[in-house]
Each structure stands twice: as C-alpha cells, then as structure tokens.
Length: 113
Image 1 (cartoon, one colour):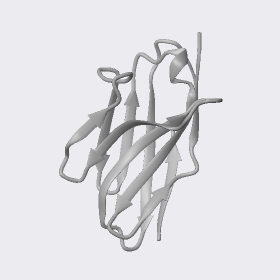
Image 2 (spheres, rainbow, N blue to C red):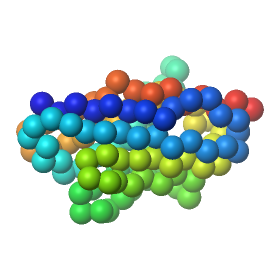
Image 3 (spheres, rainbow, N blue to C red):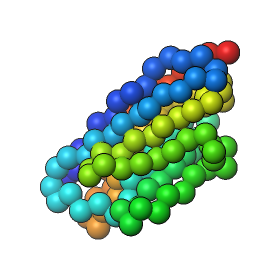
C-alpha cells in the first residue's frame, strides 16, 4: 500500500505563488507516474499536471507556463506562480504503479482577488 501526504496549500493573493509537496511512502514503491489534480467547489476533479518517472511532464492548458511539476525521489512538487482566483481548489496528489492507484487527502489552495 502506498500513502501520499500533501502539504503546502494556503491562502495567497492573486499574482502570488505557492509550492505544493506530495511525499509517497509504503511498499512496493514502484511508481510509474504521479500527478496533481484539483477540484473546485461544484466542479469535477481535473488533472493539473503529471510527471512520469522517465521525467516527461504534461500540463493542463489552463496552467501551462505558470505551474511546474518536479520530482525528487518519491516526492513531487508543484510550483504555482501567477495564481488567479480560478486556481482556488483542493489539490490532490495521485500516484500510479503496477499494483496501486493511490490518492492523498488533498490540500486547500485559496487565491484571493
């Protein structure tokens, strides 16, 4: 079983930055990719960014050029710059391996105008 713990959310003014972290632990920790998703009130959960263990990254169009996903061992990060009120959501971490599909509990990001 793989556990994910997110951190780094909070309240920030529009135009500001935040950095989210997600640490994976457990066994077997053979991960093929990790992702950040977000869910705003009344909306469906959406993919924000994904990083494959090969190093390939992908982003939602709405965050390209503003967000950067990176990895250090079994921890991933989401650097979020130029935040706007539409980025307000609960951000969830997801990890997928050959034997698991795990989710974190989420961290709230609130952007004020």
